[in-house]
Length: 193
Image 1: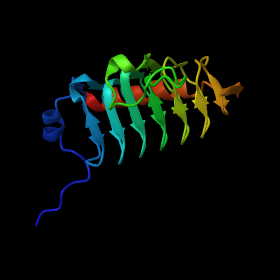
Image 2: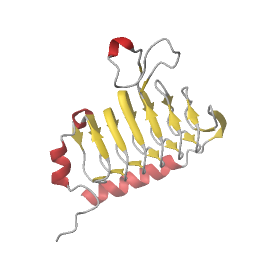
Image 3: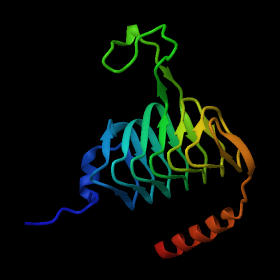
């Protein structure tokens, strides 16, 4: 009896039908993937156990999506290079109308609902802490860090540290990691030569 690997093989990933798949992509077999034909994955992407990917999603390169994270891309989700999502992060680009003026949930035909669809964009080097919720229409600026258990219900400026419900800017985030990015990419390029 052969033991099945914890992650999909390259051949299996190719067979899933992603819109685009880069090199060195590591996805747990315990990840749930819906509408793979709308999902683009860059190089060096890792998606851990029990994640949900659904709808129009574009992940850049050097991305980590930790366990139990959910990306609901009905309105589009973009994660640019070097993003990191900690465990149990939920990103919604679609939301029901909570006003009571319409019906809600996916079992109801569209003409009885008012669903908000708006893209969510995370800039380069964004890190989102565990248990955070990001709502439709949010842009998180390059280099920003979102603290654990936060609610991101509006866009945030680049290179800040944010936390809370709803998030508020706590302080500036250092940009030292940009020098490390250059060094890392130089190392990667040398290894390819």
